[in-house]
Image (cartoon, rainbow, N blue to C red):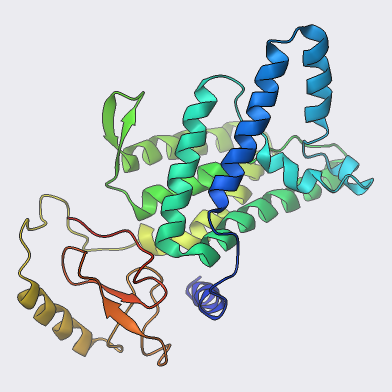
Length: 289
């Protein structure tokens, strides 16, 4: 995975304008529009609801229909809301929040690769299931969003959210709960349907395994409230003298040893002494603790 990570980072470095900037804004906006269309049908009587339901069926993922030429389903299925109720608005906001945070942390190229890689894995498994069983499979982008949630929790585990808009809870605890439920669903669902969520979150394991196995990370209680910048600079420089590189980006992990022509800078707005490459010095979430 380390080699794959380096290849992805190298591609992003060589193609800084790759991808759609603000991708989650467009994804969520499309979800909201379709959700409003669904709500319009729900309050318009049974005839209108049936008509709208037929239109929405044209947007779902169905391998048999895609093979007959309805290729738009490869895109539209990921724009369908997972809920038709008022609660969907909360999920829309949450998807936008975690998506834009990951894009800010990783950069636009890497986030686009991450998101669409999850979509492609989902599509591939849908076709494998269809060819293996001869049956269509109903697929949404729900597991792609779940993978994105796991990634956000891995990158920003100490972030607090308001559960039910009232109870403050760290995102990592929600991820543990969802992870347990995810494993339970895989174990209790019959094969091969139970492999769909596993395949859909492979991008989480590929992109976020360094965050899962990082060690020696201080807890909030262990972090000093006041940082001696000069002392911290001496400590970091001492560590870097022992390392095979001099500078390493906090976001993408690229070093001056691997990329000797890449420019590195230190952020004055982050608490502590944190180094970033030129691509992320103005495109990262500032460390405040």
